[in-house]
Image (cartoon, rainbow, N blue to C red; front, side, top):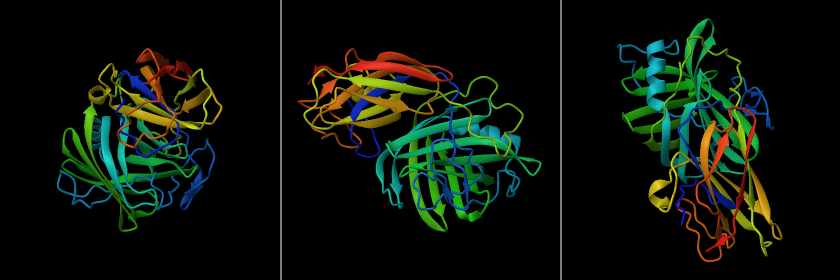
Length: 359
């Protein structure tokens, strides 16, 4: 049985990938646009375009704070020491339900695996379903001749790519407040409050109204690796760093009588025979397998490079619920468990899984 904390009930076969803790290059392409809505499509530069405030993939937080630990409000985007402290605090695999006042509603979990995507950028992504995803990036950028700590987020909302940036407005102790780079705190007000080293509260206000609340626990640690971050800041118009992808072919022998569900999850630990205790997803995906099919392809974009393990479940009766996915009679799983695969530092990794072990 697989216990997977997943955000929405999605239709498809469940793949469980267990990622080893190796930082790698990741790619994210932003949507271009301005004044609210980013352009649709899969590739763009996304330069400081503000997201639609009703977009749940626009993860901004709220909660004003009063100055930094040196006694005054920081309006320059943060010092090098503040940036380094934030990078050290945020890296890791964070897991928690999300309370949302967006049109997408609340969902049982959001797993954000924050790792180095390059020698300057920390990145994480979660796929809510085939048309909705959320990505975070944290980096130091050059703006008006100054280095500023930037929180960048966006993703797909109903298939439309969004992108926005918020700059560090002020820091108080272990709370970092980010506000919209183009429209100020009145538009996006985001607060990352580290209640302990492994507990993070993210509050989001958009246009003065609560957007989301996410109180997450760091369930697995990560290291940024190498010389991260390098001294030079990112240009203000820099795209996300390049990332590899993983293409998974899930196959079964008997054609489906009816459409079935395909789920995909990336984790940093092997599941073995006790997945409820051992599996902490760092990424998950799903696809729908149509009636009559014997295979489905899942393409996981913007993955951190490294070694992974993979499992899959074919949910023929489509009764798995969000949060805990427990295959039952009539479903099928892949065998052997935790099939290894490598995601390269660039390009596309491939994997084939057979789902013929019926329950």
